[in-house]
Image (cartoon, rainbow, N blue to C red; front, side, top):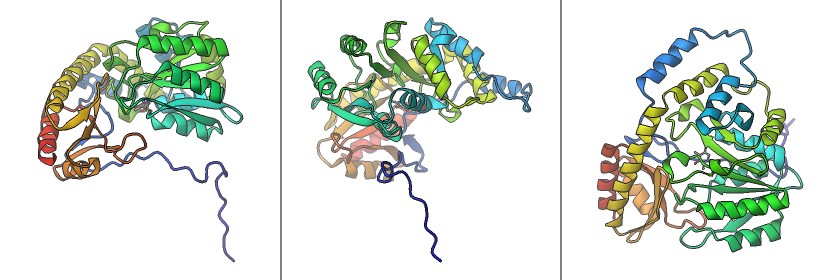
Length: 357
Ligand SMILES: *Cc1c(COP(=O)(O)O)cnc(C)c1O
């Protein structure tokens, strides 16, 4: 008898998962992690708190202390904070709550692939708007997408991954006005918010349908911890709390999140160092035969002019430098994305790039 394997849902059967190949090389500049670990005090305090954990008890389901501390960081109360296992789980919970079958989600491409991917997983339709050749988003394109797709949820990403560009405040305000009038939800993904020149957190209020998502993965040097959150109106957070699995945040993660916030000054120092290093790398790239776009994040998108992106990516890899290969992605033909590393890592990258070009 031959066994018949059950097939996945028809609407998912042809989908590809999210891929970010991990290759073991000396210089890993492909996933926008922080090049610096958290300070030693982080590990010491976390180790001390492990000894206190009551392992036979469920963790605080509301993650009250974590939410309170995150709220303090942003000048809001805990009822305006929702935390989950990475900002990806924050996005998933948002989309389970506000997208799903019969609803539409708008993205503006190229942008973070998981916005559309998770929306589709929930059964929602996705309408993809476009940016211009310089990856700038124009308001008339937003209006076209709103008219054509009637989306309930609209994503902006600022700074945008993978282009690095920040959305101007005026554009975000104009989009927010439109989503408010329509009774929709605007999600601004600020995974790279601390590297940028402004934040949409200032626009959050109880009467505005805006949430801003953040992550511990990039700025807080805690990609391994899987912790992210959003700031938004209390009525949104209350709905998300109904949808997310109970006790989704384990006790150690809650403590890790609180301890990291106690060391916020160290984070700010690391972020400032990365921003200064980003400007240095940009200056060097400007002298090379590559197109490069402005970045408000901890990475830079560039396109080699003299050779194909794929060839340059391979050549960098042979020099032990791994960058993100976007060369075959729609709208990003020939582009590579490099994460800002330590000065030493960036030197190895720039030297290898010069040779490759
Ligand atoms: C890295 C990234 C995330 C994912 O963050 P996690 O908290 O690690 O899940 C979300 N959004 C954008 C734009 C990112 O680049």
